[in-house]
Amino acid sequence: MTSLLPALRGASGRTDSPEAVRFGEHVLTYAQLADATASLAARIAGAGRVAVWATSTPETVVAVVAALRAGVPAVPLNPKTGERELTHIVADSAPSVVLAGADDALPAALGGLERLDVDTAARPTEAGLPEPSADSPALVVYTSGTTGPPKGAVLPRRAIAATLDALEDAWQWTGEDVLVHALPLFHVHGLILGVLGPLRRGGSVRHLGRFSAEGVARELRSGGTMLFGVPTMYHRLAGALDGPAGSGDLAKALAGARLLVSGSAALPVHDHERIAAATGRRVIERYGMTETLMNTGVRADGAPRAGTVGPPLPGVELRLVEEDGTVLQDTTSIGEIQVRGPNLFTGYLNRPDATAAAFTEDGFFRTGDMATVDPDGYVRIVGRKATDLIKSGGYKIGAGEIENALLDHPGVREAAVTGEPDADLGERIVAWVVPADPGSPPGERELADHVADLLAPHKRPRVVRYLDVLPRNELGKIMKRSLGV
Image 1 (cartoon, one colour):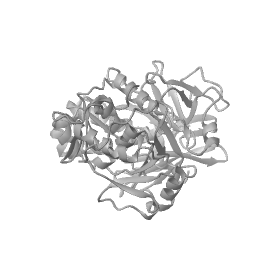
Image 2: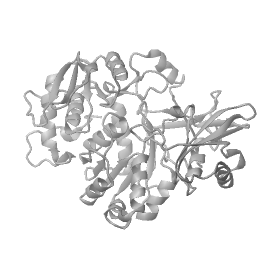
Image 3: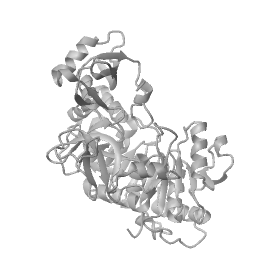
């Protein structure tokens, strides 16, 4: 890895530079991005860490890329984070400065930090900086904190390069690609894959600001070649395809894209099929985490298969492990995913105990995700070990397949499945259902029989609870702990 973002090297001063990023009407060419980031990099060089107020704007792109060019670790901050959590992140990461847009109003938790406003039109004032080493930290990205205060995953430059180069191979990603997305820029999906991915290739990214089916159709129809989204977005696209727009611009736009990629959570099989039926194109999935970046992905030249996240990416070792640590030889059985490779983080900031607990003695990272592996190497995620693996009546049952079965029922709009203690079974299966028609929801027995007919009797829900909406985070993941898990 000679440079993390080679397209920016030597771009300064060019007048024929192609488009790098676009947010609505605000466009930065590679030359403009090179100039603005070189100027800011010179101002922050030597800082320990910098916080970035990560709004979905060009200022965030300039701030993060400038930090990378300066060799200063950036800490992307979610603008919607609550005061207590934000105070923890700032205290834990101890940035020396916060980078923000000139019009951004920052919360009190950042009041003690020096503020630098990002100028996307700045010109470089000093000579270029040397390329940092591959193992130096690039980003500190905080986890969701479902089991305690968020932990900062330290991502080195080599992990970012390894993941993006593996995806280049898997997805035949080139500088000719134009990526469309509306993902937040404080997270691995939207920032590393969605911004640094195109910039490493020399391609371009068009950010919608706010997701809409109309925006997706517009950008794909005007040159976009790839779409990145989360299940919530694809669910809304599937709904739009079912409506008046189904035979119009949206269907044509999706059909014309080179790749439709979903990630950050499992895309229900029902939505896969709805989109394929309307467009003739299949969404492909990949699997990654903050700590590991990308582990698997369906290849552009591979067979799309609903319910799978593809085989391991180049350079990634993946194995399934029993609860006692035994490596599974029969990968059709459910086991915990463990991975090893250059894509891994170096550890949790200020948490050597958590870092040590996360790795095995032979260097594999314990993901906490449960899966099976098809004979051809395609990985099927069952769910999180803590919330999606249900042990009922002596069986290991994955919540995901039951959720997909429930979504096949015409009376179900959304579904989540959890387990709860049962004196007889150990755990009983609980279905949380958002009915398609709240005034006439399908009955508990009807749903149980539906699942038993599609899967097996022992996988039927024993309890059905009805909701108006499922709790989700900004990336579309169902927050099962909010369901009482």
